[in-house]
Image: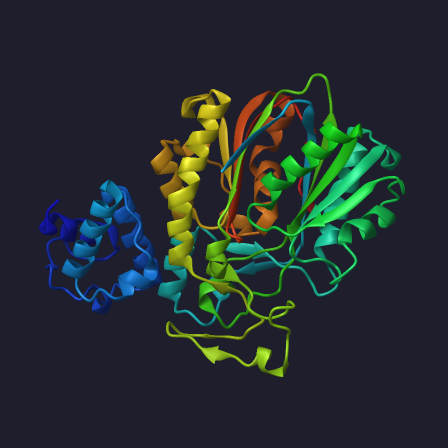
Amino acid sequence: MEIQQFVRHFENAVEGIEPESLTPQTQYHRIPQWDSLALLCLLAMIDCEYEVQIPGMELKQCDTLEDVYKLVVAKKALKAA
Amino acid sequence: MALATLRRARIAGVASAVPRQIVSNSDYGLLSEEQREKIIKYTGIRIRRWAPKELCCSDLCKASAERLLKELGWGPEEIGAVVFVSQTADYPFPATAQLIQARMGLPKSALAFDVNLGCSGYTYGLYVLGSLLENSGLKRGLLLAGDVSKMHGDSDPASAVLFGHAGTATAMECSAAAKPMQFEMGSDGGGFKVIYVPAGGCRNPVGSQSFEKAALDGGGSRGETDVVLDAAEIMNFTMREIPVSIKRLLEYSGHTVPDIDAFVFHQANLFINSQVARKIGIKPPQLPSTLHDFGNTSSATVPLTMTAQMREALASKPLKVVMSGFGVGLSWASVCWESDCIVCPELIEL
């Protein structure tokens, strides 16, 4: 699992984002496309690609896509343990 | 999670009623046109039916039940039990089932009680009534399910465009010809605040402050008597529990996904239902939906979908059907059954 691939998945999941326009440092909640439906798309993408669920409260603590990626990695490790 | 089988209970027919009045999400004023179209695309909900003040859920259920009994050729005196599954009773007490027993002229010997469930209520109700019939010696019963809830304030965009009104009736009977109905059910009350109304019960009675609207982060406002709905956590709950529930049910009943003619899911959100279907491997033709025309009608969504989308098929040929209700509680119940040309009247409008 690589962070660049995670960013590409995010771009594909949320409607209206140009391919390869975001970076791991992107503050995802500040992009113009971010709204409550984009949140559902993000959660669905994480469930589909990484087979874990991220509670909304924990997601709110994340500022950048890298933060979200690290949270997903931690959830996957917890699930595997 | 609980697995259970009914062996002698049979679904004899299903009928559904909706109010005539149509409200369109394209007219919702607190969102821009672009936002409205995006919400319609993801939720799947374009129009909904809305009841006038004087029309209760019990009225819609009663109309459904009377049409169904007439088409079945069953007399009211044959009904031994009536179960009303709803979160919008006529009064705080008594139970609405008793009022319906009297209004329909059902016998005084009939068992009548309410079950307070929403999204999972129909499939739960099938298990409750079917178990009751199998274990009581009663032959025939009615399951009435639906909601006419006005607790979705227009001022909260997160919930205002989702809900509609409907009331349904399902006739069940004990029959030697019945085929097994397998159920998978579960509860997660720890997550109840994901969908709830904060004020109005004993825990937090309604006071003058309950009607004050507080501004919401994402726009709009909400009071304590309005529904709180956390779509992200509903999504997480659904993706965590429902694919597992349905896979477990299929294994328990000895079926695979291609064996099933239709997966009738609770109709709350098209995007979420499509994600559940993807995880299970359900193909789009196996997944009927009525979200576009009716929105989320709580415990009525599954029988309403049967009436509006599957009526002719259910009436004319055997179908293998999985039905799954999930949401408020948090609670879920899924059932696998084989229909045998049941009675399915046209949709009723009141």
